[in-house]
Image (cartoon, rainbow, N blue to C red; front, side):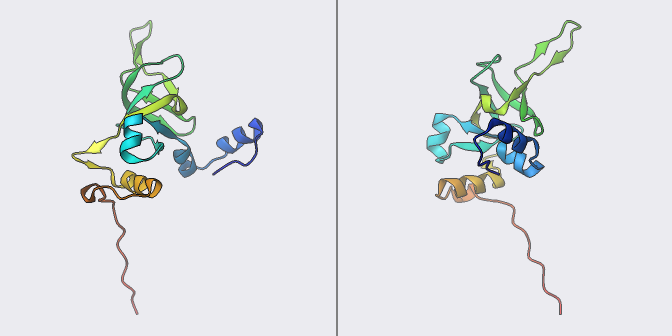
Length: 145
């Protein structure tokens, strides 16, 4: 969902009123330069298990694995960014997705996630290696007469 207005009030309102599937698209993050050259895409949606680096803000230069994604607030928790509270318990601060850069995509074995491979193929306009394009396919139901 793209907001046509330039007014910040209307842009915030649109973010707050987004549905879950629209929020997940809005929760995309920039790719690192070497990944951008490899895949030909500037931004991709975040997934749990991706490696990210914080490039802006209070937690700058932290790098680690995504352990939790909050779509409602567009915040992400990183495994390596853990702090100890005064009572001894650890907590992971929530960092806004716009402050992150994707440094490594999550892979299952040697293959990329099928849905993500489809996104890259569609956005980049070129085909990835065949073994990486194993996206889940829906089965067609037979017509009964």
